[in-house]
Length: 94
Image 1 (cartoon, rainbow, N blue to C red):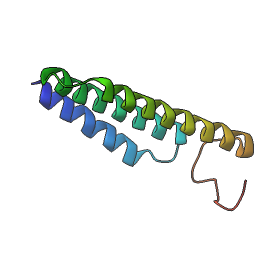
Image 2: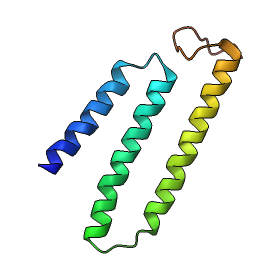
Image 3: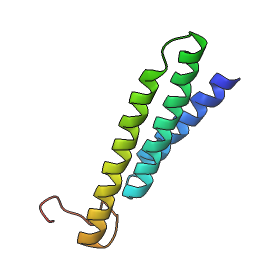
């Protein structure tokens, strides 16, 4: 039952990421939720098999770095253009 719920949550997050790609903030939230789901799944495997959980700390550091870089990009786009719509940006400006 937990596996079905986990798969359903991952599927909904991918669907939300694909269908609502206009806003950068929604895309970043979907990516963070996917990494949280991945962390929960992999941490369960690590703890059930008595493996070393230090690798999960490395993964969390990478997820936090990805989140910070995404938020920096969002702030930069907000300062340059005033919004986070992808449709109103061109790659040659800013």
